[in-house]
Image 1 (cartoon, rainbow over the protein chains, first blue to last red):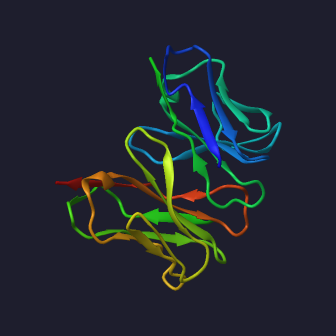
Image 2 (tube, chains in turn cyan, yellow):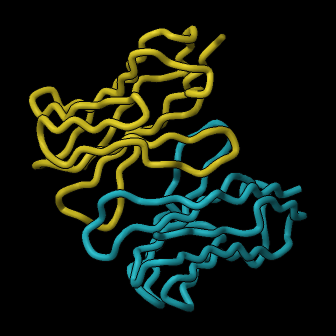
Length: 113
Length: 113
């Protein structure tokens, strides 16, 4: 069976500090990978997706970046956090190729102070 | 472009009441349709899905029928419990895939004992 991990679970960072969130998937090969952000009480905003190693598509302009150094690893980064970066960050995966359902990790709660 | 519209929440019901959360969509062809549930502080879980017209998805007492004629995928449950309190998201996978899902805004459900 497939499992998706995210860490850390919670993070409190000062404005201007760097960020690195990690997501890994087990039990599948060549998945599509996704980073979403969810502001408090709001819906899902797709930030990045990847269909293969080194292939990253960005959905919104921002000070965040994503990388996929290994097949089942997806990293979300920032060099300098803003207050507006606070939120709940969700990683998801789907089977490679045509997208059907996505499967989500437990999320990371980021608070920028 | 493709879109998903959900009824605005919060929806507040008493325990054992009948639940309907409306979801309508705009899409070309025959997209796949999904309902996800998000419990407080957690990631999203796939609740049910339907991949073609007249399909009925069901899980944990929840049901939704893919209605092509009304472009709808309403979520229903005959008798809700306090533990069903969560945010429910409707989503579709377009036929012309770009690896993404199109998401509704989410509907918060509150069940009172």
